[in-house]
Image 1 (cartoon, rainbow, N blue to C red):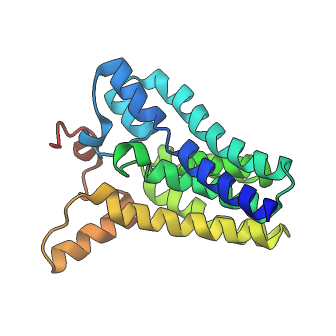
Image 2: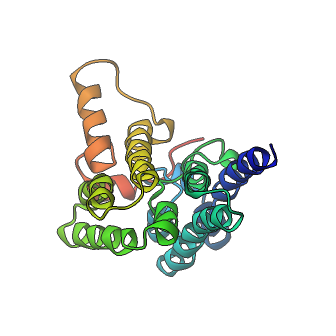
Length: 223
């Protein structure tokens, strides 16, 4: 019974820790802006880069990595088992994506999932970084990042990692797809071809329009 209670508490703490919106705090402290109402509307390192300060991406990213790493590491340290540790790490990712403190409008979860990988699957860290770097060079970061995340379950299976790690990666793929389509509850066009096009762009490009620069540099969105 004690183990069950500790496991539940750890998952809850993981979510609350993941909900700490470092990007939002950076935007408020450095520029007085609410990233939920700028550019893409995501509370993420990208928002900090374009709407607060480029250098702040580093501390924001490190903090977002650390909050999921800590949740996962504590689960292992307490002897609760790999599945519970991974559940706590994924709870931190969910908290990052849908933070309690910001009315469930958050980021995309890549940084905290890198934090989970560092604890249970260190090769996932350079793997995702390589995809992000390639995407940056090609100017197709969203598409290539999706490919990187989507390939993680196959990579962990091929390397013979425990099934719990592979299933955690599958969970991250699902969270990524859901978050991109949900897009912090940005309104969709009426049902029809345009709505389908917007949903496809959200999934592949992580935005509603073809033009990336116009999307990330949008001004006040309301709210």
